[in-house]
Image (cartoon, rainbow, N blue to C red; front, side):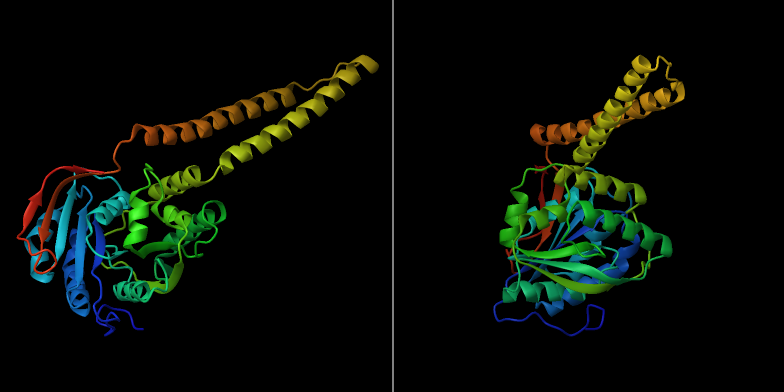
Length: 341
């Protein structure tokens, strides 16, 4: 299938259920001029049994104002939710999943680096009952070489230590049924990885490859620091690997200390020759002192994540939600006040 929203494919089936498309918005002002017409084409291909849930994640630009002024001229059914601050893209997706009213759900980035025709493929696979969750994986990407190296390293670590079933190129977008969506929202986890949660849930999965398109406008907000933080959150949230590594190092260090200590004591009492090793002793003290500090930090991270979950604070707060409808709910535009999840 050729890339682009006007590929000609239509959702299969007679009375197709509504699909809710979640689009996180953060510093996306430059992308909206292309995004809205693409979504309008997608809406036509769905015969308007399609709603878009824009989630403005504390964006500091004019994205919210532009959406409020123009979204309803392109789409028959849409919601524009505004979070009270920036909670991160995955929490913004959770907010969109909560607000969506469709039978099926999908996610699309506002920069359109993932081709919109993927949403049709997701929908068709879900409608046919081929899978409960559909992931889009990158079979090819057109990013700068620095981004490709960091992305390969990131997803390599993710695949090795967090989710072994994840495709090598990683996944950024997905589609799912309402049943899966309900399961995701029922998990009271804070600061977790949405992708890892979807794999942890199980269900029947299908993968659809795509070529990631180069970014045309703006710059990516998915920085190396955010990738590192996300990777660490995923590791701490879904594996005890850091603790097991510390345990192994501690065990080896203890064994080495016992052997060296035995050699020193035996040499001292059998030959009467003092054993010199101040440099080695200082290095060992420095090494194991640093190791203990590292271990305290790792254990502290697990304790902190557990504390955040125990506190029960919401993953996001919805300041307002504007709804435009024509046939789904037959409602006039309405403002919904402060919400929390």
